[in-house]
Amino acid sequence: MNVELNHLRCFIAVAEELHFGRAAARLFMTQPPLSRQIQLLEESLGLQLFERNSRSVKLTDAGRAYYQDALRILRLTEQAADAARRVARGDAGQVAIGFTAVAGYRLVPDLLAAAREQLPGIRLVLKEMVSVAQLEALKTRAIDLGILRAQSPDPQIGIELLAREPLLAVLPAAHRLVACDTIAAADLAGEPFVMYSADGGRYFHDRIVALLTAAGVHVDVAQQLDQTHTVLTLVRAGIGVSIVPASARELGMRDVVFRPLWTQEATADLDLGWRVERDSPAVERFRAFALGYFAGLGGG
Image (cartoon, rainbow, N blue to C red; front, side, top):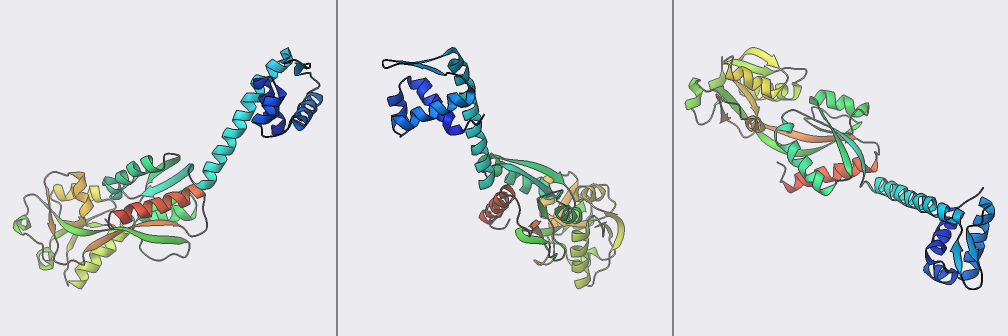
């Protein structure tokens, strides 16, 4: 049996028109080739699908049964082709996105809301991960894109800036430095300090150490943590002061106070990371969308 889609299209047209001339016109072909297609289909199936004479065309019982299945097969085939085209264009597919906890406070939810409206066919799988873990996950294909803090160049990973935000001092609400409008470097000298760890919180650890070292300030590191929300929790408990990204204010943590730092150089970058090798159309499409979205925000 060798039934082709064109056979089904011809059969369906004749079954619905019950007239070879009208069916041929509908298919933009002449009647003899259409009659030949129906003959080939009947020979392939070993069935008579139509009763025809010079005055009329009727479906046989077998033809009526075959019509329903033929219609379903043709529709499924067209749907499959449309789905494949959508995937090839990047209009559909799945994209796994890693993001840092701080990015999840505001930037990621806003991006996802825009993506649901603009790219409804792309299914997003979200994974909260520290930046170091994201870089490794990109290489192993555990994620497709990463919203992260890039520490150093990697030939396998492409990086582009999404947003830049200031770093702020964060203090217990009852701390003496709350009275200051701006926190000077000297204000932090000798203060118990809740520091990011050099492993899970490496980006902020390195940024803060560089700021303090450049200012010639030494702090007394009381605790080292990976995540911003736990840093804030310990500051709230009075364990020490810290420096965090401005987006930490989105947490709405009570009993802590944020103050600007002494220098405008105190900033943190949020980047988009991806594998430099060519990826799926959906990943490429979402990457372009994310870069355009953040560019429209003016980099933060």
